[in-house]
Length: 102
Image (cartoon, rainbow, N blue to C red; front, side, top):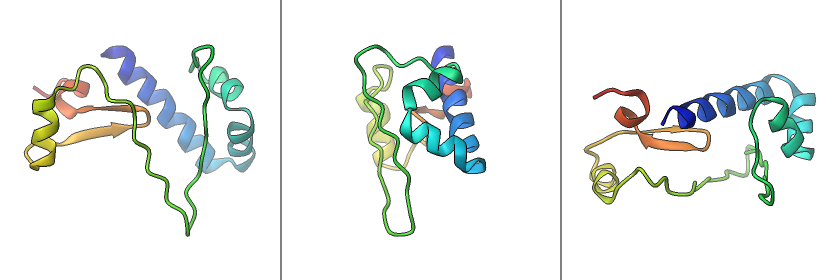
């Protein structure tokens, strides 16, 4: 789980930097593998990274791959409004599993 938290932190830093720096954002969008690697995020060989940006007219919804540590019971609780999930870039988990909230 620690690796997931660290990955989420690094991805959040990359996104925030893209919001602050247009040239960095352009580099991230044109060369995502190299840009992510420069920030300590390794993309497995053979994987494709697609960077998209919302605009005033277009909203992208990212549906991440379901983590193997999130069970059906937790997901049903979210659907019913009985548990809050934290969404970090490329990391989704119940807050208590990500941040040891109990």
